[in-house]
Image 1 (spheres, rainbow, N blue to C red):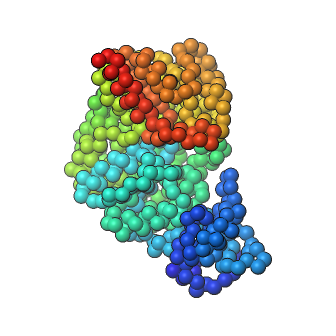
Image 2 (cartoon, rainbow, N blue to C red):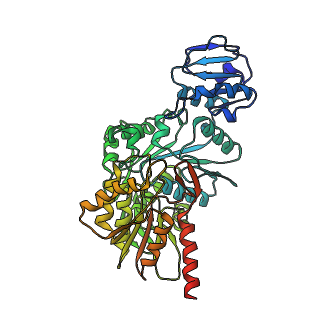
Length: 490
């Protein structure tokens, strides 16, 4: 693509170089730069991309896009812009020839539920005979391809490249988890969202956003679309959802458990084998049955069903899709066992998510709830005592352990959580920093009928301690020890 075409509708301060130069690719990573590429030098929280310009040139870069002025005697193209991330997104849209216009794009944002909503909607779309693609926390997948996700929403050039592949390979609908970081950092700029879903908002990423108000403002950006006719779907039972409904000038589809919502549930029940409910919507009603467990998942189903109605998916496919989805990796994921234990792995890593998890278990559990959890290092420290307070109030026995401590001392993180535990006055907890040992201890303590909840890491297949990343998956650890337990009994 000619540089002048790459820069179409991209605001820039100054272009130094040949605008007719052929550009073979665009990248923000110097390691991914090839001959003829345009390298975008981004300033990150920890690293400034400008220090990798020389490496990009050695790898064959044709030029650099940057917020800085062109250095004296720079030998290649230099494009100075006001906002490098915005320019990267717009250049990527041009380079990949506006792929979002070839797909139905559903953007899903909120603190909790994004992944589950995307999974439910994916199953519904499949049952309708259509071809969904997913960009989300667990993986990026379409047709017969699956890529492990490095982050919830990829950087703009990677994202546009994936959308192009989806469009070329016959995908009809792309279901995208849209993180607050991606909205704030312009990763989704230039994408034409047909449907935008808001699930809920609670305290997370406040080390980055600094306040709930700023966090909300970041999420809100998804709902003021570049695409005329975008349909907005909002959880009316969430306080921040209500605020968003009030702020939107256009009509929105609301969902919830009240008859005042556009799409709402009645006659619902939550049992160990799933959810039963009647969903009512303007065109009628349907009785749904889902193997997913708990009230939070009813909200997720309502969000997915609302989107399906907007996308004109037949009711039969909606019912079949909801019924056939048996679970999501690391989202209240049940681990089967022969001991009569109810063992679940969940991604809950905020106080609100932990509260939802424990309340769901308490509603179903007739015996004890045993909880294992920690908190991530180098992340929002303010939530740690709140998580401890939730655990102390709602679990019968808690084992405090490590999550991904990163550069922090694991015991310092646990100490922060313990402050909240002590606030409740409970003494029903212990500390085992080794997560593997903590999981084993929980299983040893459990008796038939108990609920054992392993929270925080969910689907993750690693643990980060200092600068070392080691393979670690909660579900696999549980299954290994269950086999050991079976062997001991045998």
